[in-house]
Image 1 (cartoon, rainbow, N blue to C red):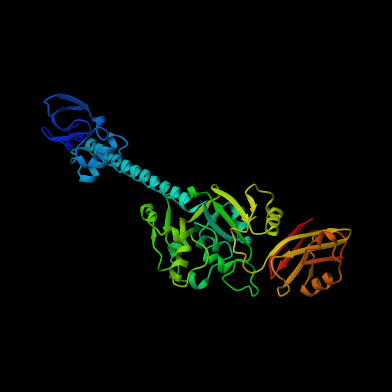
Image 2 (cartoon, rainbow, N blue to C red):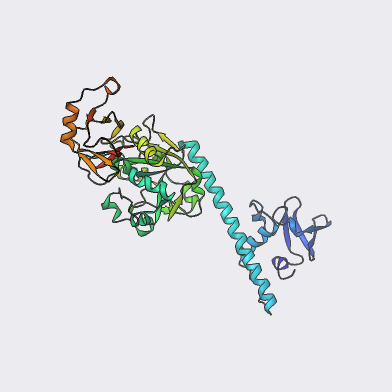
Amino acid sequence: MDNYFGKYFSLNEVIISKFLGNITIVKIEENCITIETKGNNKIEMAYSLFGSVVFIDETHLNIEYTSHIDYFNRYEIENKIDIKTPTDKVDQLNADLIKNSVINNVNKSKSANIKKIKIQLIDMLKTKYGFDGLYHYTDFHNFIKVMEIKKLLSRSKATEIGFVDAANTSIIKHTSDFVKRQVRFYYKEKTPTFFDNEGIKLDNGHPHMPLPVILLFDENLILNENVTFTNGCAGSNISELTSDPKEALNYDWMTIFKRGPIDYYEDKRKIVNRRNSELLISDEVDLIQLKKIIFRSKADLNNAISILGNNLKFTLDFNEEKFNYNNNFLKEYDIGYQNDKVYMALNYYRNPSKYDHKLLINYKDGYIDKLDKDKINELVGNTKKINKYITFDYYMLYKPIRNSGIRKIEYFMNDHLSAIWKG
């Protein structure tokens, strides 16, 4: 007893009671102490009351403790009290056990406190800014791989296994290795970075995310132990990074969540950086907390279903709220093979005439019938639209070289797979 609880106080020492005020220790026993009140009344108090009713110091009254063990452990750390020097192997073992217990309890207490602050942060973001989860943007090509391996990977890992990098190379080359080893999420949709990348560009110029897909994760991903908060683009040298949710609580969240035009008198560089704020998670993230997979168009949704099958998490951006709708893309299509003819109806977001177009008809024996832009335009010009496709931009019929054995039909816009049919 003297080696553990007794080392914190001594006879005739004054401590504090939540209900009795200052009290004096007059006896120390194995399981309790006897105290004397100002009225000279003597009361036995169990050690289990420490941290809830009885305290060594008045400053401890406003601190929450989970138990008397937690109280003494934290008091020991706070005052740097050393365990007695062991005199034999048994004492050494006991001392090590006590020290490990102290460390474990302090770590548990810290973890619980960090979790509490993170929950406070989540609630604040939801209440004040309509926070609905964490956004990860990826290109359709990468999305298919993500679904196959069932996890998101950091840039360092993803590029090793053939993922397409849609990022701005001038920024990435200055990005730290630490950030490259993180999986990156945004707090809100339509970030400035995404604005620059989104859609099929006429020249396929970088940065480029031709067919974007949003993976929306549950907000409780923030409770992950290995998270880092940023108050701007993680790759920028003007951004701050921290693992402390207390610091994150004080971020300029109003600017982080604000969207729309930037006034001429505002600091554009600072605001753009703030809107690119991120949550980083080390190495990789599984898909357990994935809430929704949001597609920009019916065409992208149909392609996902053709390749992966139906998924309850698949949804469309019905109100055009989550994407910027920059550049061009295929909105919807109908492709197939019927009555010995391939038919194709295509509807675009913008005028597609300056883009390249290609159709591949794949046969089961490996043969591929290729139609280039000129051939497609010729067929479109010679095919009268039927009522079903009267509002579509392109409609064509084509009698293929072979009458049977078609396995797959693929349409590419500027070399990006935009429509698919499987026989």
